[in-house]
Length: 451
Ligand code: MN
Ligand code: ZN
Image: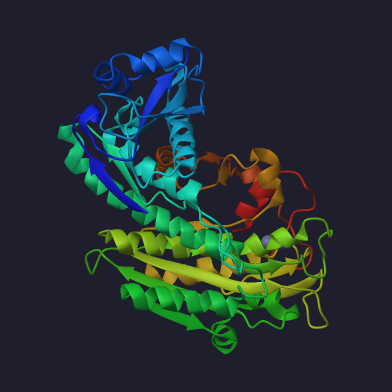
C-alpha cells in the first residue's frame, strides 16, 4: 500500500474514492459539506432519504456524484459529534479502510484526517491513520500456501490535511508507517508457532535486523551464559531440547557518550509451565510468551527506520520452558547472575527467572533507564483484560512518560503499586528469595517485586 498526504479542495480531487465523515443524526462533517455543496446537496439528499444515520462504524458507498471529481464517495459514520474523540476517530478510520478494500477503488483519499480530535494535532491524526490502516490490512497468512489478498484493488491511500499542516503531516506519516512496520514484525513473530520460532530463530531474526540496519548484535549461547553465571535463566531452559539464547542488540543513533535506554523483552518461545504444567486448554496460545521479545525487535525496526537520535540496547533472553528429565523441579534453588539464590517454587513463574538475569546484565551498560516488556502473569489479564498493559515502576517520572506514550499511541497501560507490603510477600525458607509468593494475591505485583 502506498500512503501519501494531500491538501486541497475535496470536490476537485480526482481519485477512485473519497472518504468523508458523517456525524450521528445525518450531520455532514466539514469536508463532506464541501463535497455536498459541489454536488448540489446530493449527499444531504441521500441522508434525508434515510440511507444512513451516521452511527459510528457504519458506511455507505455512493457512485457517480455530479460535481465531484472522485468516482465514488464513501460516507463513514462518526457517531455523536459531541462524543467524537480518539477512539471514535480510530473506529471511523478502521471502518473506512475496511470498506475501501472491498471496493474496486485503486487510489483513495481519506478526509477523516481533517476532523478535529481534542488535544491532538494533524500529525497525530495522520500517524494514527497509517497505524489503523496497517492494522486493518494485516493478514496472518505467512504459513498458508494460499495468500489471502487483504485488498485486491486498493493500492494507494492519501490522508488529506489543511495546507498549513502538510509538512508536519508528511513527517508524521513516515513515522506512522515505520511504527506500523515494526508492529507487523512483532505480530509475525508472535503468530509463528514454537516449532518454527525457537530461541535460535529469534536470534537469527535479531541478526537479520542488525544486518539490514547496521546494528550491533551479539548472541550468547549456553556456554557463555554458564560462564557469566546466569543460573536463573539457564534453569528455565533445562527441560527443552532447544538451546537457550541471550540476544544483545545495540542501536547507536545518539551521541557516543549518551547513556542508553535498555529494552528487555521476555522471549519464552513456548511456555508449557514446565514441571508445574499448565492446564491443556488454550495452551497453543503459549507460543505468544515471546511477545515481549518480539516487541523489542519491532521497536528496533521502527526506531532504526526513523533514525531516532537515541542510544538503545535490546536484551532478549530466549528460552523454551518444557517439562523433561532434566527440567527444573519445584523447590530447586539456583543462583542468579546477581549472586542471589532463588527458590523456584513454581516452574511456571519462569518469565521472571530469565528476566532477572537480563536486568542484572543491563547494569553493565549504565543505562539511563530500563523498560522491561513481558507477558509476565495471567493475573494481569484477569485485572485489566486485553484493554491495557499493567505498568509497574520504581521511577515515577519514567512511569508517567510511559503512561502518556500509551495514551498517545492508543496502546494504553495502567499503573499498579509496588509498595513495601507487597515486597514482604516474597519470603523463602531456603533461599534469598522465592520466585512466587505463598498466595495468589497480587500475583502481577509480586512478579514485579521479584524483578
Ligand atoms: Mn509461565
Ligand atoms: Zn511465561
